[in-house]
Length: 318
Image 1 (cartoon, rainbow, N blue to C red):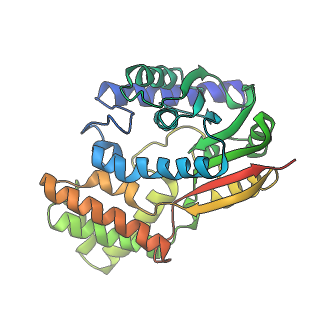
Image 2 (cartoon, one colour):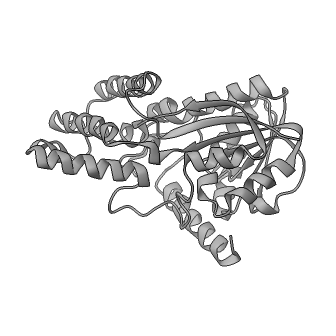
Image 3 (cartoon, rainbow, N blue to C red):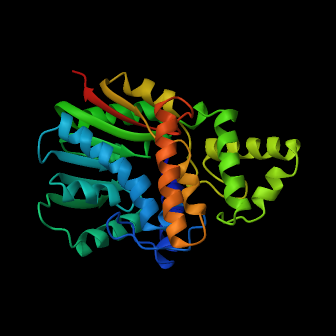
């Protein structure tokens, strides 16, 4: 990525996190708060954060406990606001987080300094640094929603391998949006329309639009498919200029050049763009959120829905 592109990418993330924090966003899975700035994101409610974000971190921790040594040195590459690395450090790992966004690293450092959960804490340091310029030796390199932003995937994989000790571990959670199908989007269209019609969806008119006739339903399915593949609404800007540069099959293929796959787990199908849209009585919302999250995982497990994300653990090849 050229220097101007890096600067543009960093500015996009700086602006994004600055706006969110000003609206009350706390990027810490254990200290998350209700934040109405988010109209459809899981960060809107601590319960949604636990169902989605913390659930994913538990899988990463399981990979670490299975394939890495206790207290392993972890490079959290593209750490953002640091909530993944913070949770790893709380579980005794020695974490170094790097990111090109100055604002994200500043907020991550503040979350670390304010952390009240210190029993068994490993270590956690941050640095503003582009991944290809990173140095040092680590037991684990971790990417959480980062590889799909990079313009030169092969070079990034080579860099990850060069930073690892012999027999080192790579862990990632990345999107596989392009595997999603119309039948997956149709299930989400049904879920959203039902929620809307009973007054539990942020867009009270969506259910009526979808239920108007078969043509309207077909249009909604197409729009939802596009929303999930692009990971944005029609009027929503992407996370950054290089967002969605790569998808699941491409990422796994690139990793296969330098790593031996240990585990590949399908992730979530739809919940990350549904949970935050729930509205209404708190008890009802909580019960519906639990059901939606359970059905998401159940449907992926049994092949009723395709996942939109995957989790990967790989051992460095000689």
